[in-house]
Length: 268
Image 1 (cartoon, rainbow, N blue to C red):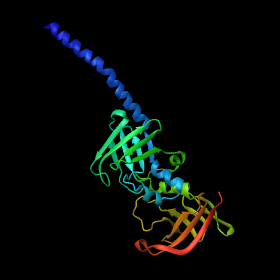
Image 2 (cartoon, rainbow, N blue to C red; image 1 turned 30 degrees about the vertical axis):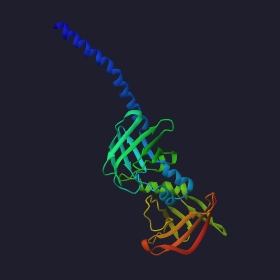
Image 3 (cartoon, rainbow, N blue to C red; image 1 turned 180 degrees about the vertical axis):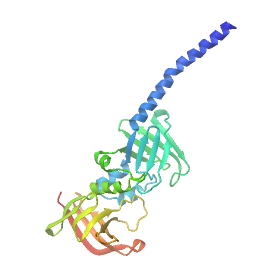
Image 4 (cartoon, rainbow, N blue to C red; image 1 turned 45 degrees about the vertical axis):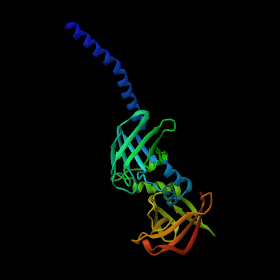
């Protein structure tokens, strides 16, 4: 009997000895992966197209996003998801599977819910979400400017995201076309100099397809005025140095383009 027990005990030790290195390897691989993907990520397939085309709404309509999160933050094994305009943030536990793939299975994901596949491209250092539409949404790490400007307030990036877009798209010094001595300066933080009596501006950072007009909008505000003026903006040359501004008339659903058009030419 003792011999039998000794044999069984030896077999158990052998099995444990065989499994331990494998389990340790899996644990080490998982921890290495979680360490590598830790940090802040931005939806490159959307945001980088905005930087390139210097237009927000056109990219929203083109991409027709079903994935509402522009930002991801990974802390240890927790995935935090947040959009720029939505105050609700969802938090998910990451469960690594084979080939560095993670699954999110939620019935309440807006707008369609169900399965999202998250994978990590170790060669390109990107995160890839594949939605139920089988479209890949590429996330990259914050670049240097994003790292500097993007900060959360009450759990969202809304205000700092607007400042980021203003810096990347419109901030700079301009002259009014036909008035070479004029100077108009758009500061990244929203301060404005040299354009009528306006002293502040803010571009609409809306990334949904619902909009009052099929145009990019900019809001101008005078210090003593409570209501902002809504204008349409777009670059009219491939170099993105000639900025067309057009006023609007009417409110919200009744809004339409007005007759006043001003062209600004970038100096820097």
